[in-house]
Image 1 (cartoon, each protein chain N blue to C red):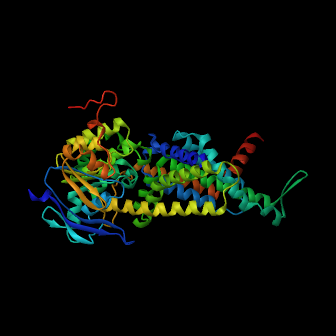
Image 2: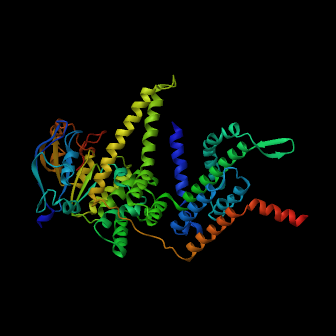
Image 3: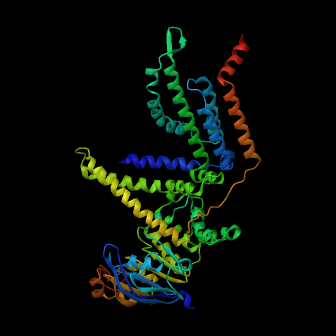
Length: 270
Length: 252
């Protein structure tokens, strides 16, 4: 099955983006984590029928993509992949919530449609911001930033290992399913029992590998605590980055940016 | 110096499922010796190696590293003395970047600052992997992974280097690099391998295991020429000692 391996390669590309060398890449990871967190909280805190006020928030990922020299199309495709899941969540809103909220000439738009669209937009915003953070910082740096911000060490170790071995597990899974495909001759779909045994084997192999990894850690003096190097410094640039974006988000949370821009323009032209 | 001696006496190991992997193995390896432990699949090589570092505790018999009998109390010291490189480098490289991985051992030993930097840089330099420091392990090729795995152990300056199948899965160039690298390591080396040509190049002494027992223990050049003995243990005379396939002439 090439799809697993393809997905892995795609994932590795995201990882490589973090090796870039722009001013944004060089910022202390903690600043980026904090700003992304504030962004997500602000976006999620809007009322369920809010739509227009959310739109200006797209500026945040757009500006970071621009300054960070990230491939916009690639990231947009990643976000688009996840949007259908958000759509499923909001799918029933138009059916249950039929009160007319907006009248565009003969077209009446119900509140359900608006809340559904709001869910999708929020998903795109939050997922997009998370991908941008990942592409600008890299997973390991995010983990150590979280640790320095106070996340318990145990969780950080878990995250580290999850990320490190997702590639190995993915490769093993890819190999196993390719072996399965090569011997099923495209005749019919393998039965559930076959898949069950395949997944079971993967689990056992993971278990054995975990044991071997633990041995390798013991061999190098592991005694329970995970030593980490601390790199990066929270300086003026970081403080300005956090303060600037937070102020911007707060402003957009308290004022409807789209409306503001609209009235500014119409006021100007009238 | 006695602290680089590896001594194994009547070592027996029985796995929980009842398989008797080692049936009374004894040998003594001196400082600076380079020894290969060879044998068929399932002869007990890996089990034996895991005893040298205290992952397995003997069912009977004893393991002595230098002046210390292997026991729970001496374990941390022994693990510092014996550097172990595992067969699959993916098991050994578990940190986000190569640098972090090589620094893992020294950090656990309490090194930091400039000392740590120097120690990591030295280890990477020795295996020719200085340019890989910032890379993630899953972005490396097989040969690179192997060299970095060795660096993670070298960074702790072990007195005894133990390697399980160091050359498995390497292309000829990477294998040649590895041989050069191991030749440079002057301390005691113990490794298992099915690559008997590599054994011939690196070792003066060979311990041949058969079904959990020492079948032969002696000079590599002697044991590796003994066709009958090797065949009995499911092995073959290394290619470099076999006659030329065309004229039948032997080297040297």
